[in-house]
Every structure is written in C-alpha cells, then in structure tokens.
Image (tube, rainbow, N blue to C red):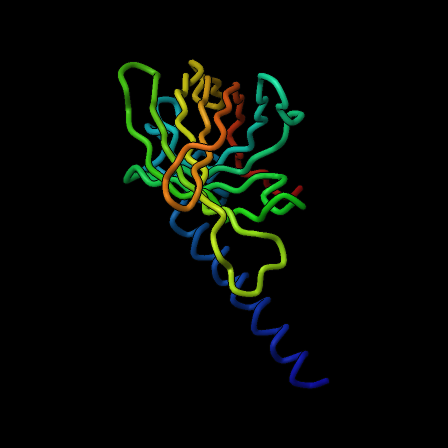
Length: 178
C-alpha cells in the first residue's frame, strides 16, 4: 500500500513540475492558450496534428459511415486507425503512410494496412489495403474533406476489391480543464 502511495505522489509531483516549467516559459502569470510557436503558422496551412474523421464509402456493398483517428507529422508521415479495424471479416493493422502538399490548400495522402484473419495465432496476412486520398483543407485550417479510393490486394498483389467515397475531418485541439 505504501509503495502505491509513493508512486502516486511521484506521478503527481512530476505532473506539477511539468505544469510549473511550462508556465515559467509562457506569459507571466498565465498558461499558454495559443499553439506552440513552431505550430502556430502551420495549423491554418498544414495537416500537421491529430484529426477525427468520418469516412463515407459509396458504391455497391459499401459499409455505413465510420470514424477514423488520424495523425499527420511535420515531416510528411501519417498514422491512423479506424472503427472496424477489428471485425469478423479480418483484422487490420493501423494505417501507415505519407502525405504531401499538392498546391494551395490541397494535399495528397497514401497509406497502407495489413489485413489478417481474425483469431489467427500465426498472423498470416490476407492481403493489404491501400488508400489514396485528396484532402482539401478549409480556410480556418481546422477542417478538411475530400475523395478517397481504397484497394484491397491479396498476398500476391492482385486487386480483389476496390472502393471509393469521401471523408470529412475536424482537427483535435487542446481543451483545458476548467
């Protein structure tokens, strides 16, 4: 019991020290409410950061809309995971990929996922899922939308299913505790 209390006290002290040092780097007497300086100029013109998106597939046999969490890094990297990445038809890894500016407020993104048989102890891949997306960033830089094309390939690289649709996203922003 004493070890748990000591660990909890250590965590609380570490958090308090982090907050104190962050405040000392900021305006006197206040907590920074703006994005860090290195990100302040990027937000309105870049995808850098985390997003929650709604994906709406279209066409015959398309699933209903679903949610996706996305992260775009400053160096053009991408990771994401979706509602439904684990289902009876298969298990998918998180998505890994890249993004790049395409001119103005438009961006291109491509990512891959590996699909596995559910409950397969060996983890033999069923194939891969590749998504290509065009992203149109809003003027505020806090929303985007655009079309996508998704292709499922078998383990030897043959196309077995193609899909398309649209996605809309909103930037995840810091919400301070009251």
